[in-house]
Length: 366
Image 1 (cartoon, rainbow, N blue to C red):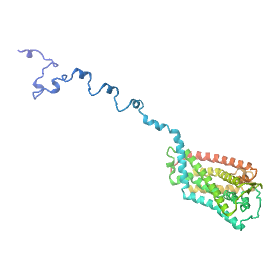
Image 2 (image 1 turned 90 degrees about the vertical axis):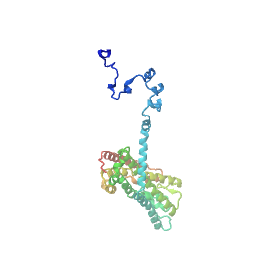
Image 3 (image 1 turned 135 degrees about the horizontal axis):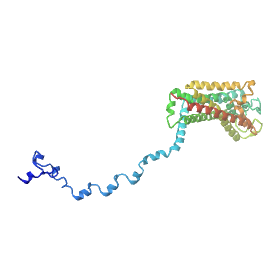
Image 4 (image 1 turned 120 degrees about the vertical axis):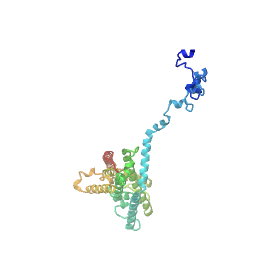
């Protein structure tokens, strides 16, 4: 008996025979599994990677990039505060362009510009040769229409007369139309909810709407003043003018006072603008908001003429509207002017706060 037959064969040292492979050939993986690997290969299993590559696994990224992986997000956080003012100014500019591009707004401005033309032509036809009408001379009285007696002597008085004629009805009606349609018109057109998409916001949108209405107040007043000045220069002489107090001032001083009167008239409409904006937040119909605002204006002015309500009349927003005539006195009477501006600020604060409270809690569905 041979040694190979008598000695047990360990599995780990079993000789490779042909039984392990039917083809009679030993598999390549089982011939010498460690012969192809040298000691140097064992120490560095990956020859293609150098020590520098192991230290920096991503050669395309610099160390500064690995330290701040969110570097691209940083610039988006920096302009967060100025973006608020940028969006507010951009929203105001958009509202301004939208308002003054509408045919309705241009028609209102055209009607306001035609009022001084009609007044100037009427005074010119009445006086015939453009001389003194002989109705009042010095023009006492604090009311605005008393300026008509001075128009034939100086065309600059047509500015004061036109503002006095348009202030009780035409200017407030135009402001009521624009303010009443500010929010309700957007809701009626179905564009309000798109305007409220962030980062616009309700408070910012309401502020932009009110600023647009106030800009229209100033533009409308200046349109009336410029139209009256142009017609007055064409139909009547210009020069030094006599104040309500009887003193004479130069033409340049008269122009400055005319500009100041236009600004005061525009500020006198801040209460109406806030009232119209508040009414606009109560309804989704622009026509209903405009009609309600104009109706309230007419009602308040009727109540302001009833003698039995003299105790309440100083609190009506239209009570001191014609106080701008005191700017044509020498010296200027500031008492009624201060009361007028203070009352308008009170109305603007009250109805502006009411509009904000209503609009910020309103369920916008259109």
